[in-house]
Amino acid sequence: MGLIMALTSACCFGFAGVAAKALSHIGLGSLQAVWIRLLIGACLLVPFVLVRRRDALRVPRSVLPALAAYGLLAVAGAQGMFFAALSRIPVGIALLIIYLAPVLVLLWARVMWRRRISSHAVFGAVLVTLGLASVVQMRAGVRLDPLGLLFALSAACCLATYFLLSESLAGVDLLGLLVWGLGGGAIVLTPVAAPWNIRWSAFLENVSVGDWQVPAVGVLAWLVLVSTIAAYLTSMGAVRRLSSPLASVLASLEVLVAAVVALIALDEQLSLAQWCGMFLVLAGSFLANRATVARVSPDGPAQHPEAEPQLRLFHPTRQHAER
Image (cartoon, rainbow, N blue to C red; front, top):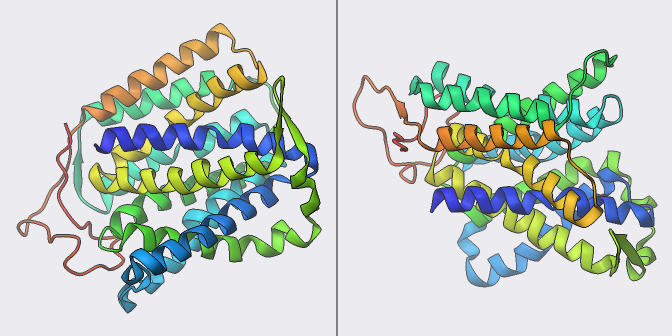
């Protein structure tokens, strides 16, 4: 079930780029698209949670710092730093650096959580990195802006934090965590997204998605419902059923999905090197899925995550054994 959720999440996130590109035709900036998807996503979830699962929004005081970090770093930080990097360095190189996040998660799990990381997981992460380098067509001789590289590395750290916190907060209700994360992220991004400059009437127009003319409001609905709410729910669910190291490697499949969606919807052709890179990413993800990521616990079995939810970036909540 965890693997299915991870693949579903990658597919949902993979459509975000095409949707955001389509909305750019009506003058919606990238950060504004992110702000809208976070805010509307949170606003849609709140009534449902209040009616069906009101207790989901109640969290112990011990997790408040973690919730703040989740909204600030895992959601707003990852999105904001990514688009800041895109303004200074090529998209492909930015994506490659950002999707070094699985390597950062593996290192954290090994050093801070004292988990034994299998050779399959390490080799799988290496294959994914090499594959991503081919997919994004990283070329020699490109002059890179140091600040742009710093933004991309910061986005990678924020993305790694997303996976680590999603696992550490396993005792918090999934819907409640998503509401607080999306809402907090939207609040943090408000000053830089400048939503007061959005031309809201433009959503009544049609936008081009390849050869099709689609209502802008329909694209927005897809971006919010599929590429935000469904994507985050399945991603966090995958982390809880697998582990943050494994889920982070599988999340790299998002780049492949985005490339295939762009090929079908926008007729953006892929080179032979990119197809080979996609094969490497698939092979690396397959190896990672077969990996065993186990915590080395000298003091006995780990506590069940629901017993006392709190921020546990330095002490994992449970033992994992994925095969």
